[in-house]
Length: 220
Length: 303
Image (cartoon, rainbow over all chains, first blue to last red; front, side, top):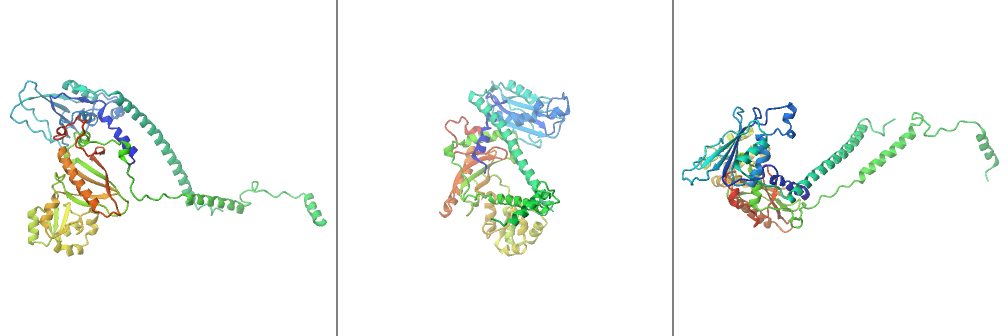
């Protein structure tokens, strides 16, 4: 079993879910969010097209992240702060279809209608959950995610929904910084432990080789 | 006093210009191999002694369990835990993702282990593929097919198992076919898969139909290294449904712990909820904390 300290530090990282890009409270008008994009990244399903070099295209550090990155990194934060809003992801293999985000908003003046809204199936990785047409009291906003960064998609999303961004408190900033320090320290100690282990292994290998070569006692 | 002639002799040797005896450092290896060898041997023996000095720590009698109440380890109410876990699983197809429960026990490393199966109030998986070993063409076989068995028979089923074309995940054997099963020597194939029928596990039965009905919604669990792990719910379950499942399991585990003799004390230490891809969150036993802003309705329904 893992020690309590390791488990504790893992749980401290839950703050990544609480704070960061996407930490925002949606207004009650937002009824659900639907994302539709392909598995493969060709044709703008990953990011902007102005690629300087192939190497830079694939590195995350340069910010070439898009619909999939938005789902992986930002959507959990939105979901954490708005647990009651359904967020559906539909993935498929057709890269010709543009990646689209659909936001369903309740009309402010609409009276609650009796006719049932079309049922949206749960998230699918087999293209089974396409965006349904909006109900009578809903309107739809779509965001084209083709060739866009995940940060750009988030900007569009926040602007369209008029979500209230949550800024981290002073304590939370301190916690995030202390976790950063912890990460650096752990990298240093990991390198030290690795060096120790390699030295030990080298010594053992040398002894093993010496024994395999006939042993010291038999040296004449 | 030594005799004079001996003194004289030594003096004479001194006075003679004979070459000095070579010391070890000055001698090359080929001149004094024997000397070098003895030196090396002593060195090797020193190394061997050092290896012997290393002592292994004895394995403790029981599993290490930290005192959570003393350390203020973060524990979550069920609603808050579900909120975090659902955020982790957003956008994943619900078929492949489940809630999982680990129950850490305070127990000895040896001694009896807890294992059983339970019918959850809200089943995680209900479409089990069940096969029944019973005399072919008998009334039992017909009843079993009517009750929902995917395959019945004796030799046909044995052949299928031997060919490794196993299309079921539960195997029940009727008492009358027990002998045939033992003669078929299928333990080597079925044993590792955990499918071998056994009286202790309740898979060699007299009433096949009842057993199929019970087994259809049942989930097995077993203590391994002091922890019981099992799937506890679907992602679409509401907090109330999930609580019913957890309570049913915990009640059964606690009665099983109490039934054991006092020589082998066993107790529930910690209950941890997680999902297939999510973090493990220690539960505090409440549905909702007073300061929680999340309502149970928010974490039920569609993801």
